[in-house]
Structures are given as C-alpha cells and as structure tokens.
Length: 378
Image (tube, rainbow, N blue to C red; front, side):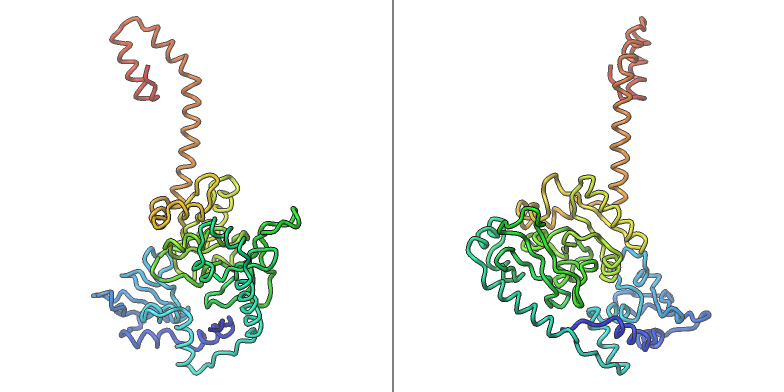
C-alpha cells in the first residue's frame, strides 16, 4: 500500500465541501456567515437538539453534544476536517477516508515514485533476517524474544549489527535501526539509524506505528526498538519509540493526527525529566495533553515487560499519571524537603521551650499545639 503525498492529500481536501459532505448525513440550517447547524449525525449520539456545527470558511466541524471534532475534547475523535468526518461516521482509517473521497471527486492517486527503493530495502531486510547466526539468536532470546517475535519484526543481522527494519504505517521498509553486536570500535555508538533520505526522516518517525490501532485511546511513547517489541509481545497496545532522536514538531503533528492520549514511558532521571517536559510542552501548545510513566531506576520498558509479562498493560495503566500531577508531586517533594529541614533546625528550640514550661497542663496543651501546627510530637 503506497504512501500518500501531502500534495495529493491537500488536493483532495480542497475539492471536498464539508457542508455538502455533512448534509448527506444530517439536515443543516444556515445560522450565520458560513456557519451551519443541525442534529448530530453520528448513530451513537441521540441528539435531541442541533448540537452539530459546520464552519464553511474553515471547512471544519464539531458536535457540542458528544464533543467529537473538538480539539480540547477528552472523548475519542479524529479531528475536524473532511477526512476526520468520514472516519468518524464510517469507522474507517485515515487513508481509506482520503482515497474514498478522492474517488468521489475524481482525483486519481499518484503512482509511488519510490517503489524501487522500498523493494530494495525489503529485500535487504529479508536477507538480514535469513542470515542471523545462532549466537545472535541466543542473545535475543536472553532479552526475552523468540523465533516468532523475530519473524514478526523481521529482525536480522548484517555481519556486525542486529538489524531492526523501520516500517512505515503500511509496513514498507524505510530503513534500519542497527544495534552493535560485534565490537569493532569502542567509540562507535551502540545504535545507528539510517540516514535521512527521500523515504525516511528520523525527525518524524515513530517505530511501531504500523501496529497502532483504534482499540486503545492512548499512544505509549518510549525510546528503543526493544522497548516496543517486548511489551508488544505481552499484549501492550499502541506502543512506539523515537529511537533515541529528539522529539520534534513533526512528532507532535503525527501524534495529533492519531488523536490519542500520549503516554511517555521514560526514565525519571534529570535528563529524562527534561526530555519529557520539552515533549509535553510541545504537545500542549498543539492542544494535546499527555500522561507520564516514570520507569524505575535502571530499567527500560523491555525490562518492565519481561518482568510483568501479560500484566504489563495493567502496569502502564496503574502507574501512568497526568503530567500536571507529576509536576505537583515534584513541588510537594521539594516542599516536604524544605519543611523537614526547618523542623530539624527548630526541633531543639521547640523542645527546650516545652521543657521550660513548669505547669504540666499548659505543657500538654502546648505539645498538642506544636503537633497540630508543625507535626512534631514531643
């Protein structure tokens, strides 16, 4: 299945009138300058009032009742353009919606100009996969993988490195992420990704997107290929990886288009927290709000999955919190640290004052007062 160019997508979108598209499913009444309203057309929303609005000038839509199409909605939605409307109404994929509307408006899909490149990389992946030596297979077994996993992900070996094909959404091979296995140069990086090309751009790539489905409202974001493969083996849904590259605006656009809640499953060390904060802020600027799962010291998602196995999905759901909650917890930790420091500094003075009170009843009252105000029991 070929990729669709942005020019083709834009051409189809420009040829579709969102008002006419929506009018196939519900009766709309013009209520203002380019503004139309009617009952929500979605079969799951029994709309008794005209909650559904279409804006002709921006070619967008939203239902104020079921919140579909709204950027700040916590409910499942696909966006607010003509493709999103068809996805929402018919339960089809994004590419299916584009091609269906293209056919309706008479625009032919372009030929894939990179077909030979994809075919070459596919054949490379097959060759690497078939030529894996026993010692590499044994190593991957020690990391929790079996022959079925290696086949599913087409993991291979090129003579020096373990190879992980980089699939696009349609499982075309765009390039490779390679992990050093045979030591030839200590200064060489452990992982090496394919260079940017006409078919691959690491700044907007997420490993594992070909397995993202609508069955889960979250998109779990981690760091490496193994951090995707092992959790997926044990049933974790919608887990992808940046493969060690910085989070970019392209990633933001990709995740926003998926219309899922991002959950960053990353290290909680200072460097990890800094990276998470930057990524979360970028998404928030785009109206996408995130959750965070801080991993235990020294462990990655592959380690967690090998430990919890079929309970890894439960682990993610039980330990992921909103980013705001994480920040509040950080503030409270700092507050508690400062308060305890003050208590320790003042404890001798408070103790001395209480001991100086000769009246037993008054001393008891003051002890209770100190406990109430400072949490010190003397």
